[in-house]
Length: 194
Image (cartoon, rainbow, N blue to C red; front, side, top):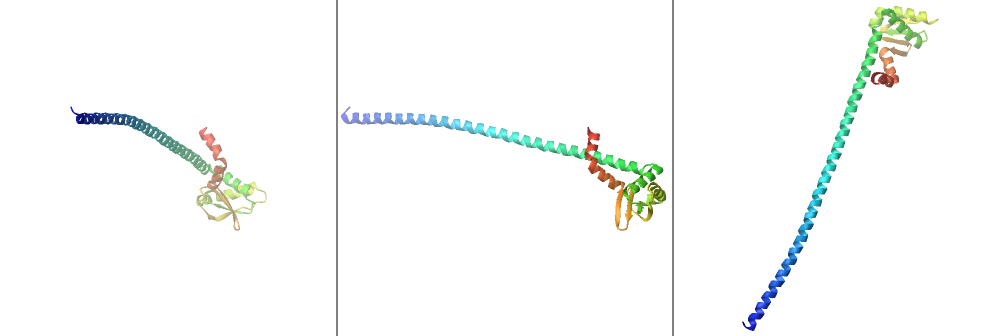
């Protein structure tokens, strides 16, 4: 082997060693980068899983809250329906009183709410059936009273309207029960639901 071949061989050997060193360093860098990417991918996967769990928990909580609110609204509606039924039955019971008790009730409404000078307006059925008896009972119950039976009738659902000139006092059962309902709704609810 001559000198030129030795130099060429040495250059080739040194070049291979340098290439091998570069490749080894590149391999190490690739391994480090791959490990970093794997760790980053694992962290991203874990973060995505955590976010999915949080989102699912939040959605479940919202759905549970909505379901609870709907349940409470349905319960409230049912309770309101029961209260409505209770007051409707009270109105029916008032209208179904025996004639003498019904006359006494209408007369009492007139006496307690009127001065004694009013005309009593009744429903057509009450006007025809008990009108004169209500006026007589009201006048008898209030000294100096001069209640009269109005020719005018109204569909009141039971009860009486007292009228003197342009002033009217509504003592219809439906009106009185509406006012009582506003005043007694919580008491009725306690009786029905406690």
